[in-house]
Image (tube, rainbow, N blue to C red; front, side, top):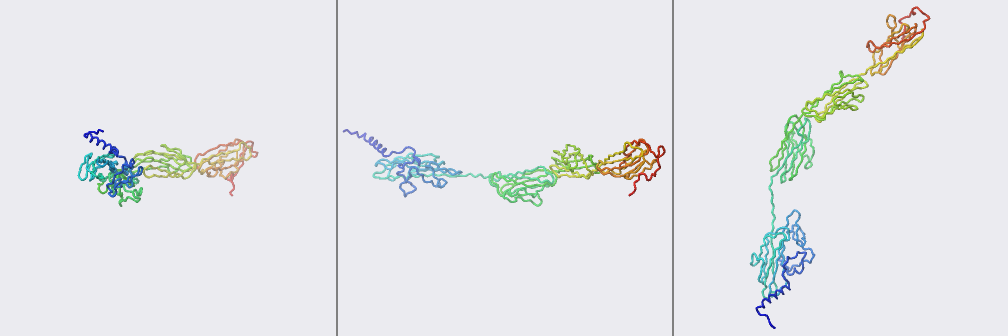
Length: 588
């Protein structure tokens, strides 16, 4: 049998040794698995350098939950990252770097051969790890054959300075040692250390407040209006012990009525000096962007242009002011009313009223409303300038009246019954006091007389004829001093009258005069005259009606046809009679 030449023996032995080494456990060249991919055979031979009393680390079985990371590393107690693949920092916090160190190698190696290790350094967090240093205590019973990459420092302790590891970055260090003869164990210890820091930038900002005053720029004397002050923190820091003031000058005073209580703490926040010139508020604090609204009342006292000043100040800042200009005006709406002359009117006729409305102030008036209110038994007959009639009133509305404007209004009223009437007038606008006036009018009635005289149409001589006079008052007033007279014809002789009358003193004594009388409204009076026909012919009687001496009076002519002759005096004069007794009624 032929043996290979000695020069070929050494390469053959090296190839055989490499084959045996690979068969017993070759070096791993891939990235080490994560914790949840962990295989138990890879844990053999590993130690925890932080616990000298334990020679080997008991790794968890596949699928088990790894022990929680220390709270000083994660920031949250009892936090269990999934396979050490990700550490979630609490909301609002920066992530904390976490660096792991694993050693891969064989737990058994052939005698006389080298032993290799891989140190895998991995940043399993979302933060950068700075100043990463890997330190290895080399075995005392073995000589170093290889270090890749070369160590930064190689003395009693081998040291690699990896500087910064980005999130998820992995660095691998390969070490090869050759045990000394007759050594049974080679122990390698490795540590990793890193650091991280936290910094904070604090912006230094002065306190800043803004103030804004809002409210009416035109006021009316005596009017109370609401103003508003808004204080806002426009800076970046909280401002404490804030004092707000509102200073009024002549013409305005602070009203002591508060619009709202407790804009901050529920208590009365403002105070007013005795003269009413300054109102003050205290606000404990305002955070950045926060604001407070202060509502308060101001009363106009004197007319003219006035200014006020709102200010705000706090510790560490200069006082801020805002000037506010306003004008106090007068609202002076005047009304004059003139009624019928002598304050008297006649029933059934129109009583005229003239209304004059004038803006004597310097403020423009709006929605000026004028009303005339009367009793229900009256009604309007006319209304000028667009007056709107209602059941018991007439109303005018004007959209605006500028200073100096004058409105002349006329209204006519009538009533069907006599008596005293009071007509009310009002004028008001959106500003100023309401104006009132009242006019009393005495409505007197009117007597309206109707009368009629009745006489027989035909009678015979010797018969008694009756003349009848009826006087009616269809008016609304008493007809006074009514007088009725009758001129008797020559063909008749007076017998009597009802009521008793006087005989006229004339040549023939043929006039009957009734006493004067009054006729109430809606009443009537009847008078009768009895005569005797003494001669045939057309006997024409003349009736007169005179009211309150108003001549000549009303006249009615009535004719009676008398037929036949008087047997006692067919052709001679009528018989003599006593003129003082004819037609007179006995006194009872």
